[in-house]
Image 1: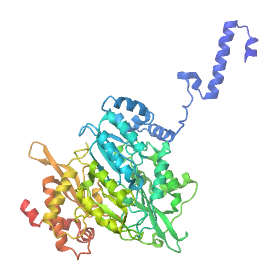
Image 2 (image 1 turned 90 degrees about the horizontal axis):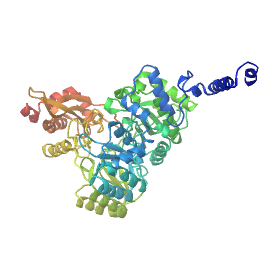
Image 3 (image 1 turned 180 degrees about the vertical axis):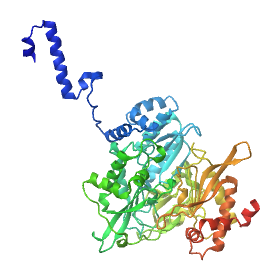
Image 4 (image 1 turned 120 degrees about the vertical axis):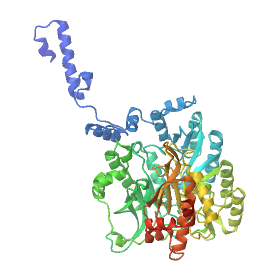
Length: 601
């Protein structure tokens, strides 16, 4: 180009201008137009880095005419991990976070609870729900130093600590790191705490020890930033087939240990069955895909399932952004084909006829004393009042675990925990020391299966005081229905998020505002469902009463239980089986004939 310009009759200044212009054209050709700045007409640069898969999904949404929801815009404007130092600096001044920063803090495990409370709650990550005694005591110390003098066990076999002031948020998280723990990704659009069988490795009935699988998947998540920032939250569970279920059917992905029989087309032995699409708050349980995996394949398959969800999940409507809705739109076979494309291979499938049926679970397995597979050792389940324990109790419980057991505390999805490795000779000592703390290892048929979410005292979405009402219902039933001789699960949840999974309880209550008077006033109350189930009998319950005042709910539960006891086909017929035989509507009608309800009417 320079030689061509020299042959023309231009002065020196004109030649320099034209040479610069020619160089600019060449640079633009090499960079796809970026060198020309705002005047470029070439295509935008392809996203790169760990967030690329999410940015591309957002771009496709916009290109197809969709409007990103606020949370997607917040993630795009500032990645919660990259904004962490700013969040720390602002929190150190005691400043409450803006809505978008409240969302970002959840990537680090902190939840601002306004307007109900003006503090953070921290939700941890505890793979398979198992802690060492010194970690358990250390969390109690952190709670005292930075938050509330109590903690809650959650329905994901996890712990929550509350009343953490803004300036104490990061010091609390730093303290978890010192204990070898983390809260990273425990909230917002991320994969939640990884659950596994609470009695893994100590249960004579189990097919597989889930602890290595849960820990391996936990570490897989923590070390891959591309698995953060999903269209919505995501749950994964591993069930080992033991006596205590982990409720994997309520998870987006469930891995179930199974025994494959001869003639299945794959080698007989222990496999993991893949179930997908559980989200009980949306009235769906995970369904069997027919796919079976070797245990060591679970991580790669879960990763591929997630990447399909990342690419195709709804980023415009938060109510339709869970994986269930992609499965509903596509069907399971199309989704699995996309997973196989990611993996570059076909997945093995087995007809259910070639799988041994799941062994029966024990609804009391998480309460009281139970012999372990190890000769002379036991696990002991401690009952917590709807998951709550004080920090003083936590330190004392940690000491019991260290001195009388194997030093582990195992949380369960039933909002309690178990000691493990307790020798026969130490059982009575453990029981007496627990009682001295104001707790118990024995539970009535109603308290053994009593589950309640945080409720309106700590959650802005809840329409009722679930924990308080749960305790009132339990006390009422113990007095009014002393003949109740089998465990009945009663689940109270405050809102449609269904953190207490009310749809799988024998009796489920979901918070509702009940209209009273003619001025548009409301009082706390519940819609009531019956007939839910889990483990070997998974089922979504059926609503039988709507908008029942909270004050009337103990009487309703009493009437249901008395009807069951009066009309059941022997003690071996469970409440769920009775409800299925009788029918939900007939059960309601019969319950309304009970004196407790007729008098109220």
